[in-house]
Image (cartoon, rainbow, N blue to C red; front, side):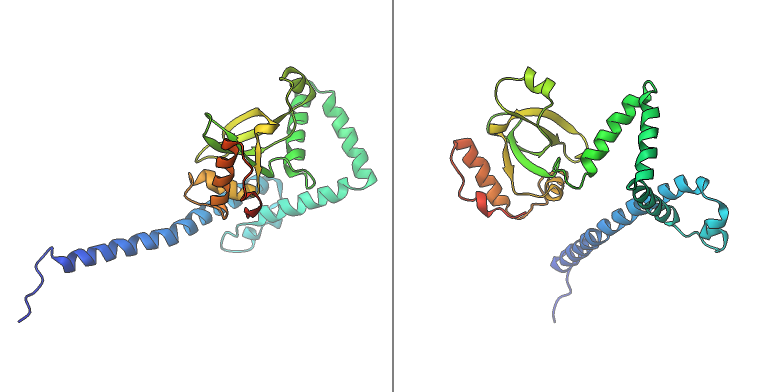
Length: 241
């Protein structure tokens, strides 16, 4: 007769390992879906709550349906911004826009905030600009240690005149795991290595603390080592975003 497996034997250990593996597999599959759905729902619900007090009740689907229909506020915002851009593109819209900006320019405190926010939005959302759309490597926080940075722009004249004679470039170094926080500083352009990596891949690399590696990571490491040795890298042209 074949002896029955004893409690705690290989069979039970194998079953426990399989259950644990199934659990973590399910967690890996469900986790990203749940997190994405939660964030998307939060964004849609927040925009709906902003728009709802501004729109008459007769326009909301909830008035006529027995269930809540999310997303009407998002649709209203997209349509409204598109119409605003269309209106601002013609002569009458540009004239009214100049008049409105002129009134804001005469208002203390508000004019400084408006100009700052306008410059930020124009820089970030400009379709023709390349600010924060290029990625580079700098030696930080010490020699021989390389960090991923987003390349911003050349320093303003007042800043460049106060800096040493070398050409400088401003960069933003994001922190892990929240890339919206970090360090903004100026680095000599000659010591900045621009790499062929998309901002999306760079953000994922930073947020995951290196767990999510973009393609061409080995080539990037080769470039960093070559830069440290002061030699051209043979892999520089082989990096893929």
